Length: 261
Image (cartoon, rainbow, N blue to C red; front, side):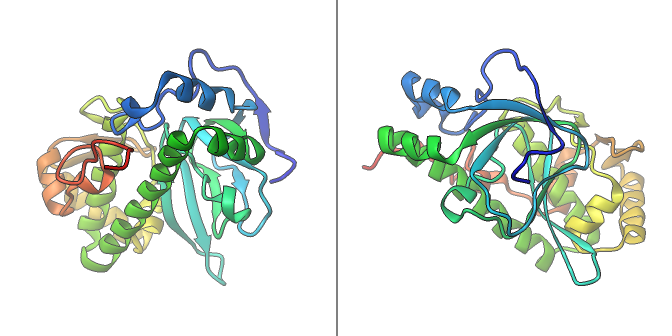
């Protein structure tokens, strides 16, 4: 939405971009690069739950960094049925690929109340010209999106309903753990069962049955309103065949530098 209707300016204490690449390669960024990224924020805005930020095909001149909350990427079919194709948590740029593309090929909306830092594309261009090492970090963040999209394809193609839900929750838990937002018990991302259905290619009825099965197996405790308590994370990971190394935080795929060798 080019007029930013539905958004309101808000104040945020502390650094707004402090979670960018936290747990991955943030240590690689020099202090001047961190400050340049912080200074690139034109304003901080708030978006109400279940509100559209960017519609597929509209021209964009800003990218948004997620300070607080959860954003969803989705596509609609000809009957208006929604398929979730991505999820963003705090610390992510939700539409950085809109910088070179100038349009998104999907819709972008808030799940809950979100706080977003708006970064104009002209400012991003200046960052890239001035700080090539930071430009590589921004590129790295878009590659993380691509890695997750490939994993979502695997999930839809090779897992049953319970496995798909387990994998989605495992991935979300690990992403939140990397940026220090998971307490080891309660999932702070409150997706409803219809959201899980739309992300996992199943019906809401099937999602409901799957959650019942996961509860009966002592893996999860759904508590209504999208709240989920993780009872057995190891069993959850096994069921979802989840290995989080594709998130490039820890494991065999974890990078150690943004520099060329």
